Amino acid sequence: MRGAASRTGVVATPAGGVGGGGDRVAVETQVRGWATLLSLGSCSPWTPGLQAASILPSTRAKITRFGQQPMRPHSLAPGRPLPPAGLSRAEGLSSPCGSWLTAGLCSLTTWTSSPSGHSWGPAWPPRSGLSICRGFQTEKDSLRSLTVSTMIHSLFLINSSGDIFLEKHWKSVVSRSVCDYFFEAQERATEAENVPPVIPTPHHYLLSVYRHKIFFVAVIQTEVPPLFVIEFLHRVVDTFQDYFGVCSEPVIKDNVVVVYEVLEEMLDNGFPLATESNILKELIKPPTILRTVVNTITGSTNVGDQLPTGQLSVVPWRRTGVKYTNNEAYFDVIEEIDAIIDKSGSTITAEIQGVIDACVKLTGMPDLTLSFMNPRLLDDVSFHPCVRFKRWESERILSFIPPDGNFRLLSYHVSAQNLVAIPVYVKHNISFRDSSSLGRFEITVGPKQTMGKTIEGVTVTSQMPRGVLNMSLTPSQGTHTFDPVTKMLSWDVGKINPQKLPSLKGTMSLQAGASKPDENPTINLQFKIQQLAISGLKVNRLDMYGEKYKPFKGIKYMTKAGKFQVRT
Image (tube, rainbow, N blue to C red):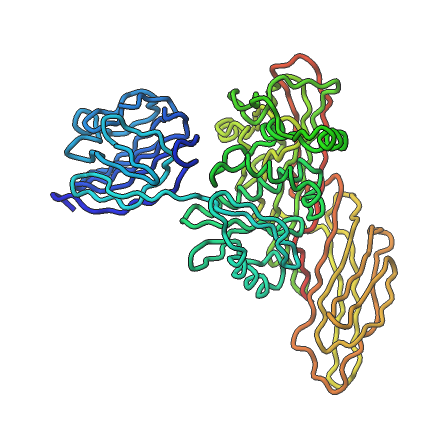
């Protein structure tokens, strides 16, 4: 494409409404063979720094990145060159006088938004909450029309029975009938975890997460990154759990006022605003029995009367002026193993999902360094924002200023099958006979590669074929139940004693004249092992800098079963 300017659509979403904070702008256009992407940072009031710009001349590709440094409001006006302020990297930049927004390339002259219009000219940019533009027409390189919309319109909380017990709207009210599409997907799913996380509807998208037997369903109207919304929903759940100790339907109903106050602070006009628990707790005080009584008598609220100190610091996840009598830092390494074992006992697939949860109660502003014995085991590591990523990349060491209280330091994945040790085994003998109304059932569970640690909390479940009428079983340990209606067998084993392995033996009553089942049942296991990380991950040491006291430090390991399946 050369010569004449093209007409190109531009995609974007709003940020905080007209005059709101956290303003961002994204503009994409193609003019005379150039493709330009401008992305402005989240500064308010309107002192943004250019974050990224991609220029594609006719034969070369240029990438230029700018930091979050403030720039003068006139610095991106038509005909003005980009200033050097905030420039962090530029590769092969070549354009007339170092300017992109020149009259011959891409001069934005007029701009309108709803409900009132603003001029996009020498006094650029306007004081408005624009983050994405639609309808970019370059007849004379001017923006003719603009659509401003909200990222998250509504949030619905739905229990496992399909009842909506809480809803929150940030713009116009979205009818509950939009959840009918979600209910249809819920009915088609065999389990709650199998409901699709993204459900398209004629006018909306429904994005959901399922935690603590509650569906958190966000309603959006424009196309946004799904993981962005899903991550925010997880933040909502974590915040509720941090506020109330447990995230459940009764607790949310009992604290519905605080829930609405927290949601109002977390989203501003549908865009994430404050998601750090430390900041939220200064804005909205967590409920206590004493505070509830005082609020009832005096008519006061949980809303704080001061600006959170963390908002003004370089580490917004930690409030200033933290003081403790007992300084302590605890870390929990929790690994969940997912595996499928075939009939012969060989591993078909196995992987580990791990997290490191922390509880840090330290005075002042400590700087911590956490090192591992074998950090190369970790794949797909996701960090808390406090972690210095460059230090991890170069040294495989976690360096961070921790938030105050409970938080998830990192999550990781171990997918190399040869590194995943299977901690339990199941011996099974399940048989059906064509000419008999009886079948044989026998299973034994034992430990394997547990480094001498005890396996506890063992539960065995199995969905039996429809032809099984009843089961007569005798456990050597624990208790068992069989539901003739759902055909579900459950055996609560408890701890496994290596000297005397638990077993479940007996017979199955089958329908008379029924054919032999096509498939044998699958055995599902749940268990946990204390003081063992099955991947072999071990913490080497924890060091603290910036403070002179010596804190108490503790580390705990645990392995538990995720989706652990044995085929028979």
